[in-house]
Image (cartoon, rainbow, N blue to C red; front, side, top):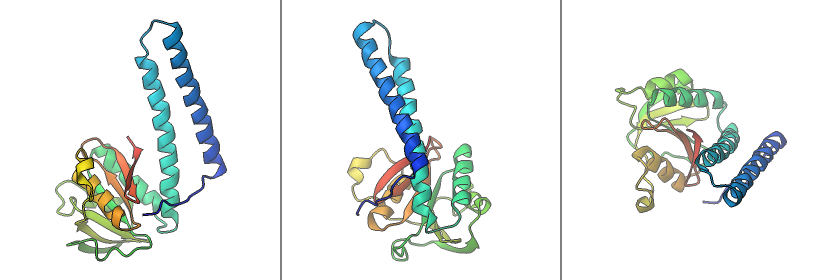
Length: 203
């Protein structure tokens, strides 16, 4: 799968450049303290990690919206649903079809045929709902089906620590240009998969 080329807009580029400057300055300060001081650097390493996670989250949010903007007008609904599901630790697997048809890759889904809304997405993934374990397919502005079975990642041996939802998200995006949003019920982390790669959106 070819990596997509997607330039950053100027405000996001400036934000990331500022964050990278802060990260570089903090890393240099830690290096100097190791040379000149006898102190514990654990708290400074935690601060450095937070700076890196913040810039990663900002970039991931930008790219997610850019990857979806051409294929669905419901980015806000999808994002809001993922946020609410993550806050409640309700697992979710939301598939957004792009150019490649997914008809031959998803199996045993139940037809929904309703307009995309964050409330409907949250209801589908409510624990105990018969459809909450599978993937929900969105095609432009419609929730086409729910409870779909997705193909798992081919290289499972290198991804043993990933749960079934994450392996399914990677597996589908290894075989198509779909984008898949995953909410972990264990951690509440939101990730998205594209081109066979998984990116953390919110921890």
